[in-house]
Image (cartoon, rainbow, N blue to C red; front, side, top):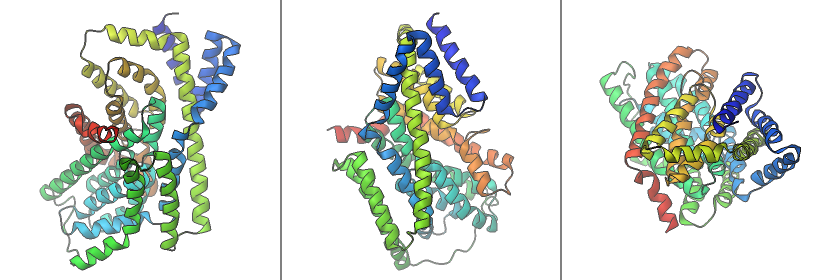
Length: 435
């Protein structure tokens, strides 16, 4: 069998397993067992067991459960809502105030937790009822919730970023820092969009007389949430300054979150139990994903598909940037139908050898993929954040949510284009810590 037939067989079996309803990670592991047995014989299965253990028994993966635990603690203790309240006090009477509060709160919560699903659930439950009462249409209310919630994928601490770094075998510290400026740029684009649209179409976000807030009150609000802002310094600041590794920063972040929750008198046994259970479930799923991806990479190597594909791409007379654009288009298409974890499992083992062979900065490419993964969460018809939104606000029609998501999709595609034209937005911070 040649390598093209091998790839067709692998992905055909994979699609069949997914359509059967088998969990993604187990589907990949099953495919790996069948493939290695066919290509290398029964003795190769011990290799799969060894590589599975070594792939997840790494110190660099510790941030995954710890970042997830931070987000769960902030959500279960109710501290996440304080970030939205603080941002709302500082926005004042700008057009589309509540939409801007959603984006600002999502940015801040993303910098605290890195959990996009939790962010959408929190913002949706907190702000959508208030927006509906103020006459906001779904084009402004739902759009801003999806925009604010999705920012958690880019802005550290991002559990999805750590997982992508582990799969792509790049520096996790550099990848986390590389997401800061693109994340802030995306938040700025959202602010501009919602402000301008609220100004041009006031019927979508009717202005209302917000109570006057003095500077003293604003400063008091900022002081109230200052312990939460300290978490950002501990997690992101310590990595940037080289004081701690991502694993050490994540551990300190969890301890600091527990202390802050106790300080606000929000730390209860029930909240702690729910946070731990949810963390264990999500972490186990992500670690199984790494096992599946590692085995899939071995299967591609054993069949010769990886080396043949890299050689074929290297022989093409085509600009590398066009290949990158093609890869982005593939990921964008996959995002319409499958979840982010599945996209990483399918694309990273195939794309990364090509990217390295072309001499393209892997950190820059991984950030482009992260933006696409964020996009996959809100892309109709199967974006997971769309269904989270529907779950917390069941009165909304699915068609309304889909329609509200489209401007956000276009803004994120614009961000990808900007990052391709000006890669320094991604590479500046990683280069600083290298030097």
